[in-house]
Image: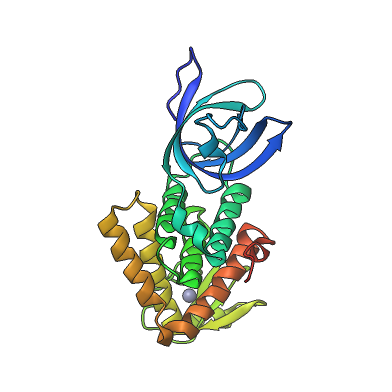
Length: 271
Ligand SMILES: [Zn+2]
């Protein structure tokens, strides 16, 4: 965040993830930003057709903002549009997934606290979602990336207890409450109330998902890199991988629910 102490203005690159009317003419927006995480800003005179700020009041619009800090809520004074993600608004499934991610960004990210990795993951999935229809895989990538950026993801390589390398090991188990994978030896010696067997192929598939999420967390993808990531998503969505993708999605969903927010699983509107 760039701030000058005299004017107390700052710039943000942000996506509008929430909006509500305040009185007749003003609005309060929730922005998810690169520089400061979740930020609430007031917008004045949004009903004026000439207002350049109207673009900011559309849900899922992305732009460069100038914000003036005030007592109470900060004020949006300039909005230079980047994109309104028109491709997302073409289908209810896309809007539903975008809405889920926006809700995660709104309810799970902290106010005025930058999480650059999460922001890039969010914007890159939004860009790719416009032309890709593999919603289950994109949700899985978002959830896994969310767990990783919040430090709650589990290692796909090592036993959570003894740290041994799980490569090629069979009879690996996962315990959601304990927060990770257990090698056969450790799972035998533990009282695991909540443990489930995890197939080798599920772990390997998780590594693919983790790689795709990592590619999206680094920076805004160029068109070429986005096309590559999109085709990796298509490969992960191959019909033969459906059962293993569903297994992983079940585990990751339970992790999100247990370690991040108990209601998160209800936030995706199933169509
Ligand atoms: Zn172990």
